[in-house]
Length: 466
Image (cartoon, rainbow, N blue to C red; front, side, top):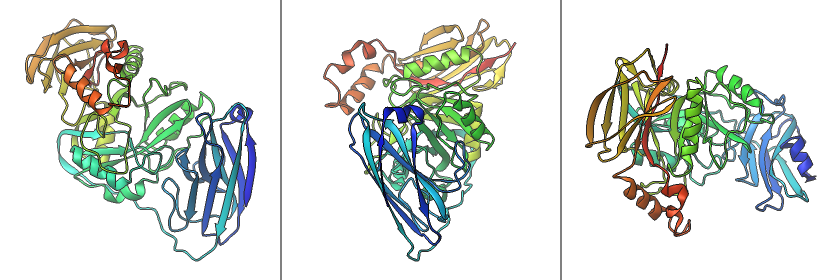
């Protein structure tokens, strides 16, 4: 079967998802699809599939795969499928190839979809079940809450990402491939007390990205209205999951309504990649009275090979949570509660604040003092912040520093940041060496970076209640 269509910007404006229906007879055991179009800088068409159970947005069933613009072909069979696509029973009836009209040139574009069906005998393979590993013991646990494999648009296999997480010394890892959860074929059985994998998926559209955590089911990503953010919130919360707004900054800010999210990805990749914009928006939301946990994630797209440690690999930044044990449920609870901080890397500075018995993420009334613990940031600067902005700044005298500070009554919340001072030149030099040849020679002397404070760590807030 071959289908041709001319897609236009009018099609894109009417609905960014373009459907090509085709009939699948009983007894089919494999479907192959090939997409052809004039791919260019201004012409990018995404690719996916739904089976007859799709009821339209928002559907609970019928999703059979998504690869965005990373692939121009896929197969779905009863025993196997292209990464990003769901193998298993092939229901007879009307299926749809779905094209995401991400970029359409002014003149439109001709697309051709070729579909081949096969009925050869094949086994019916089930999906792997979730596992529940636990590492006993309360303490600080380190993880990365945003990364990708070749189940979406990275080159690296899950096995390579697994090796990268071990190399980084992580305790937990959330793999949030774009609009699909098929990476769990590998990560469900591989989760262990040494490295707990957290269920994730990145809801990805042209005007905003959000991570879904702790949900077994696929979540429908086909948002077409700004108000659909509230539909997304409902889909996630009714399944007991967490919703996090991703990298709300250039180049892809959150341009939907603000839902009742649980978390915000305040720090994504290197700090100098516009993360001060995300932090500013987070600060504004806290000041407006929202209770929103801060998390960080590298958004690392695993290459085909294992790369050495550096400023632009996995767990840069690292989210550090205080947990009663290491398990997926404990990680999710710690994320939601905000019991932790974000630091530049797995061995980055430790930063902890407490007001009496109130820890990061919890609430207190009229605190008169804050206890601060900092490790690994001697010569840098500590800043305390409430809803009005900075309320105290001080130099960090050494690499193992504990101090108790008297407070006037903070407004709405209290949080802390470490600003690079003694470490700044080293951090910039390390990043410059990593991107040599990829940016202009004077890139790091430009005003955007030269005038930008570099955060090395930042805490979740302690909320102030009247």
